[in-house]
Image 1 (cartoon, rainbow, N blue to C red):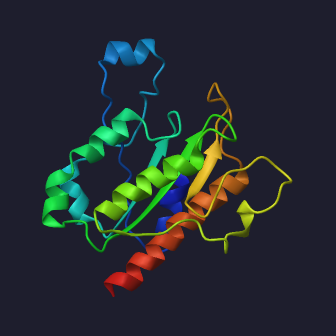
Image 2 (cartoon, helix red, strand yellow; image 1 turned 90 degrees about the vertical axis):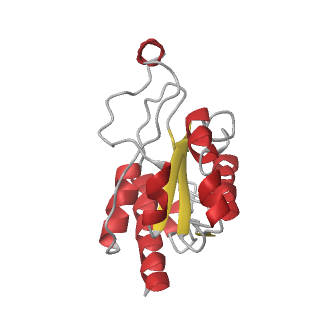
Length: 182
């Protein structure tokens, strides 16, 4: 999903950096718990956030909310909040859940709420992306952001509608950011 969001943002003319937040457990615990550790994306830094015109946050759902790793990362942004360092930037969100009713919208809201507290202007996945409509297939997407379903064992990969929605979101945010800074 992150790759599709990034591709869409590039299509919209943006320069894109894909980052990930640090794990909160030791490597031994992460390996024993089957964490996905082979990620190519470098670690994100709170200090680099003000350098971006737009920030699209992606996080899996953990019991209807963001996982501890993402919450801990954003909990470190109090200094940015105090300075108003993210005020006026464009923000958006995407997520994945194990099940259809596993908390996609509450996770997206928790991300968007954080971005709003920072004074960011937020965008969802507008219904102009028609791929999120219809019941012909299991798919994610909502007016709050792009999403997908992974199944309880993580075996389901995003479908074409999910990836199209992620690309649409990235392109849409890039377009909004370009208008805003122009």
